[in-house]
Length: 319
Image (tube, rainbow, N blue to C red; front, side, top):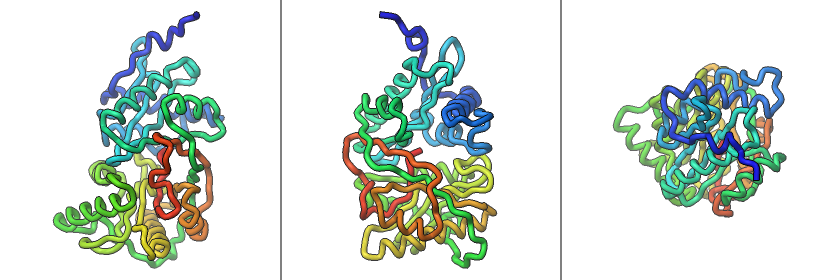
């Protein structure tokens, strides 16, 4: 049987600071090539996934090294009991050589070490290669997820309360209230690390509905160069409201508050994703002007919905 030399020689190791530029280049080149962009290395413009996800959890970031060159990377994210990995990328000249599987194996191992009870990822639904690879590791394709965008309306009059508006005591109480709300959406779901990373790295802010004693919704928003949004956009990385009789109305308020935040920071676009398994939430986003620009599929391990349910008014896309 022929030996795949690249796979045999590739070393999978934890990412280090010195790897960031190379990992960023490979990530952009890989996605840009897959999507057929005329200049693949310019994929995502000045938005950034590599540095922020590494900074959020260095122990969950991996590179593939071949003959001293970084040729791929993968990132694991932990939201309490929920974890996901990606973007997972390999240099195009080494596609189909087995390095991707090694990077997935490393990420799955880290998720297992963390003890997450629901793991997932976002991938291209039409790619049998990607779906087949992840199925080998126990992930099962479930619902489509829409990555959506709407033009920001500067005429909006809603004012948003944000974490940065609060004093130290108020921030602490609010973060604990956010943790309680997330727990009500899915057992063990915890966004405190994501909030901390966004604040600590200056990538954006967290929008709050309600007051510091009892919040009804929250959204972690990123914006500007170096964030996952990039210039001109505000990206809702995660948002949720309580699943009660007021959920639909509160969800609309949360969308409006995020748009108000986008106006405040001068963004032209508001980006957000949600699962088609949440039809009422999806419908309210469409009614607010969001339109899908990309469909992905969420793959889950185990093959259970997690918080991808009709009663979960959640914004996220696991990219």
